[in-house]
Every structure is written in C-alpha cells, then in structure tokens.
Image (cartoon, rainbow, N blue to C red):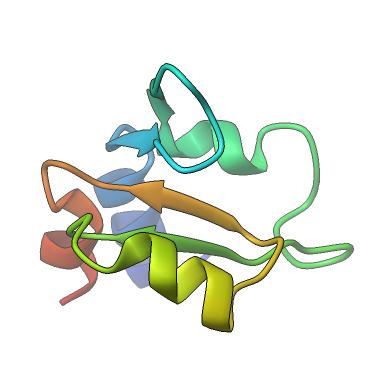
Length: 82
C-alpha cells in the first residue's frame, strides 16, 4: 500500500456510516466493516456512501437497485476524499 493509499484508508476506516434504507431501525457501523469479511479488489463489492438522505430512496430505486446504500452523517468520506 502506498503512503497515499494508507492516508486515504486511515481517513475513512473509522467513519461512522448509517444503514437507513435497508434496516429498521437504522443501524450504524464503522466504514472498515464494509471490507472486513472480503477483499476490496478481488470479488469486490460496490457500495454507495451518501452525504445526505434527501433523494436517497429515489436514487436507490432508480439507479442503485439492490445495492448497498449508506449514510455518512459526519461527511467523513466526503471530507477525506474530496
């Protein structure tokens, strides 16, 4: 892992995400939980991390059907990755 990749990883690994469309009640977890059980490249999975809830249900229904969608209340991903 390059220094740049390590910096990005360290910036996002502890960001708290919220699963609010697929869970009732909402659940929160650390971003690193997304990739803890399987590789990030081989057999990869793609998730959406949103910085606002407005329009999220429509986005998921129309463009991300069946995909994992999470809310980043702190905007930690947005801040870290610009």
